[in-house]
Image (spheres, rainbow, N blue to C red):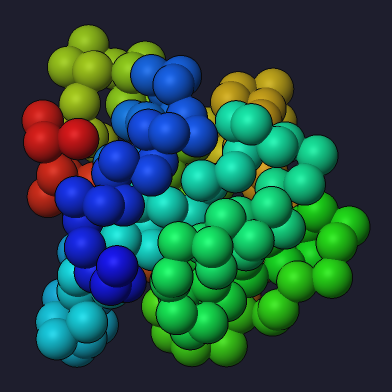
Amino acid sequence: MTDTDRGAAWALLNEYNQDAFHLLHARTMEGVMRWYANELGYSGEADFWSVVGLLHDLDFERYPDRHCEACQRILRERGYSERFIRAVACHGYGLTGMELPEPEHQMEKVLFASDELTGLIGATARMRPSKSVSDLETGSVMKKYKTPKFAAGCSREVIQKGADTLGWTLEDLISRTIQAMRSIEGNE
């Protein structure tokens, strides 16, 4: 098994996840991570980034209380590299109460920053007549971001911390992630 084998990763994801929402989120993050890899000058690693995005919540459905911990064991058993395992696990840094590695590589920071944000952007898009990100503006997401009850499961604290970790403004992170989601709309 290689870290970039999308077919094997998809089969593994489906072994541990059956909920349609979780599978859609995984495909969204796969596409978002591929877009960011290309956008940020890591096109040679786009397959790696995208498979990390696909499997980042591998253990969430079956092991919600051990999210980001159980996946490390599962991925090791399946022969994934330590670099891959670290990348998947560190998106939960400081969030789960478990000792997880801090995001250091640009890819790890992007995963941490965009994971929660894709949920907020998706929820905002579903409220629009088009139900699409194709005509979604950053300002619309910012308004919803400032409304704590809207998409309450999407942590504003994590989104802001992600932007800070990347050294980007919140608006820049939102704008870029909207672009990333536009690039995959209809393909997830």
